[in-house]
Image (cartoon, rainbow, N blue to C red):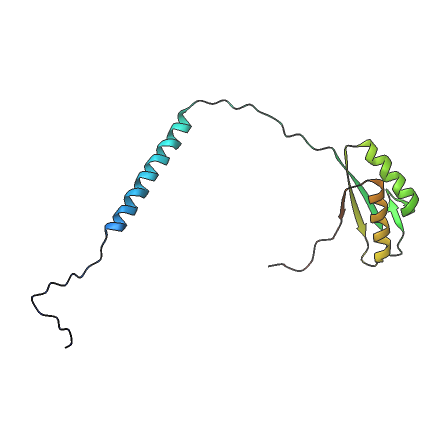
Length: 140
């Protein structure tokens, strides 16, 4: 009842390598075509124009907040709602784009930083960043 293998039946034992050969030949053709295109591209004479990269006209507007929540601009104490906003507006009119950098002390209160950010936003400054010191810890 069970099937037995008779000695006269041929057993095909082996790996069919036809798909492997097909893939290798296709890759060979692809590499030959791309190598030829690369060689043709390097032979053609081409004279590219030179251009200098234009530097964007971005001025930095650095605002410092000390540990006692005093706001400083260029070494001079200013009030966030009045002086800072007026100076930011005049600096924004003087240049095409203004980037404000807030350098707040670690001991400065959140309210002082928020007041400076609000004054800068009301003046029309769209790019506001924060100055930070590099970490002394090694990062992976």
